[in-house]
Length: 414
Ligand code: EPU
Figure 1 (spheres, helix red, strand yellow):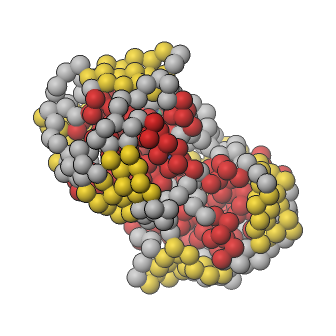
Figure 2 (figure 1 turned 90 degrees about the horizontal axis):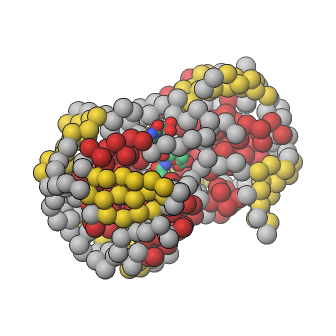
């Protein structure tokens, strides 16, 4: 399957942000801890969520989905995961089953989690956090097995604000009696949204500066919660608007999460305005060069780095982009080079030259790399073909429909 895009036209119009992928995924796995049904609103209909739901349903979780973002999950009859849960290999977020199964069942095992390939994606902080909580972590060719060996709270200092290790520590800590503290947790808004969800279903979690205090061993109930808007999806459309010289409004966004992108827009002379929860990007007379460094929040989001590379290629004098989160998140560059992008690599980053892009047949290397190819195809005249389109649909709900509503000429080829 592929996307065919005839680009070179400015995007114009208004769309609404989907619910955040990276908030919805940990919430879905956390429902394993809930003793009553949970209703989630704003769950995006994307590939990764479908895999998560399929995993939960294989464990005996009852799921009702109305097809428009509202999900009811009842995990009361769930069973622990085993190595036979092969779909876990499809997504990274399946690693959240480790913390969740320890908390709910005291044990469980999963095949190694998959997800986008950015070189090695270790789980050593996940392991160290759970081991601090008294969990036995064993690995072999089949995957990872965890087992709760003690009932004790713990203090763990994360060496790096890892999103996934924060989620797994919190889930694991909810299952052990007493108070646990996590220092150095990930401050991304989707992580805070996950914590807000847990509090809604009765978890006693308190944030104090750089520490998260978790009171474990208490029963989590059910409840309802609305997933926060997806700043990465919103940012992707806003970057595409700027790269095509168009005017696009994304409704349902929050300033704080988008502030690192908006700071970059400010430096690049890209005009934008907020009205309530709607953010509009308007055409720039000229785009100025800048340097962007992707880093944990409040740094520039790594998940917008590939899309930003395309925008920098439209700037006078190009620009520079570094990624301090994923060293290896650059495999998409080879595909963009087929479209005329000129770059020089340096350790952790790339110098982007102002480039005249042209259409090509390219392949999505990973989710956000695929989004960058879409951005480039929209920005240059002529028809591009983007293969492996399902990789992009892992994270973007109704992408062709949303782009079509903004005036893009996009088709899906079987
Ligand atoms: N790291 C370790 N050891 C660990 C965990 C992480 O060394 O045990 C390192 C990683 O190798 C990486 C850095 O820490 O260099 C950041 O990893 P993190 O754990 O924060 O990432 P993640 O939880 O695997 C989530 C998102 C990613 C997003 C990153 C960073 C989900 C499901 N995935 O991954 O999202 O890039 O946080 O914000 O939440 C995407 O949506 O396209 C995507 C890749």
